[in-house]
Length: 430
Figure 1 (tube, rainbow, N blue to C red):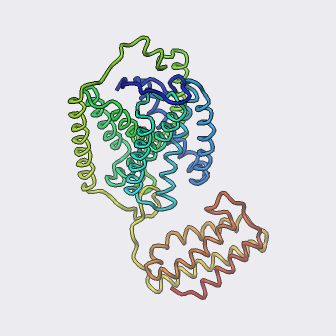
Figure 2 (cartoon, rainbow, N blue to C red):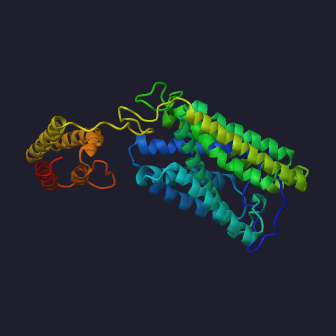
């Protein structure tokens, strides 16, 4: 879709020049670039640098507030603050969905449903108040606020629906590019036919998120999977992928700043206005959207029914749940508990000798062994496992393991929590 033109609504309140760019081919190119770099850069900070999901989310929320403030204070569309806001909001929206999925355990189908309902609510309030959803009339502060709220929700929704598609189909990153690409192309054809331009725009806008994210995953993922279920791709890594796309974004923004080809006023002075006023074609276009949605749903159902792994037997995959393990026998349970006790005693002895580095490594090993055994131990006695898991987490907190936002506690406190764990291991039998 090179452009989408619709009737400019009458502005209310403090009027400014339009605050968003004209929807040309450059708009879609840079939008996909922003989405890709947002995905890969967030993964680099969260996983490669070990910043953690929560800390990464808080960091980008703060950055989002800062750049959005800059964007809102401008009186007209300026490429740098606008596209910087898009990059940051793409990361923030993605992280909000990931927080719900990874930290809270919300199923992706629920996230998709909730964000879809939220988007419909935002659109409803926006239209009731402003009588227009067109991005060609973002010329007042309230309309711009609605616009950026909508953009944020579309990124969260695009993340949820995209991840849900991958969860259902287990497609590789290279395969997963084709569905959103085909959907965007179908919407573009329907728009050319005469489908409602505003609806066409927002549907395409949502779909660019899974498209850009899948491209980023394909470029960044290793050529050979380290664990079962891990994605494979071209092996560029998240940092190199981020730098390539940041460079492309910077070059495009410089070009648009100099040429001003995407400034609405400049564009309208050099192009004939396109008016979409055929109600019959809009109705037929709506039918077309429904048909495309049904076909997409059929493709997902087909992909879901194809033979593919649904769990990781090693338990090491970050993108696939571990396969259920059988309950330990009595002998296996006794041996596992003895293993944790030996490691806990070793860590206490290392703390007493002042060897904090070795103590940290020992507790890290104990955590890894505990995690590997957790499924089988829960199957033996979930109540006991839950109690011991809570105390295990208390030990990890004193070492700042899995809790990167806090500082390690003193050796005395570490010994204290390890002693409590040893007591619990002795008293609470599986």
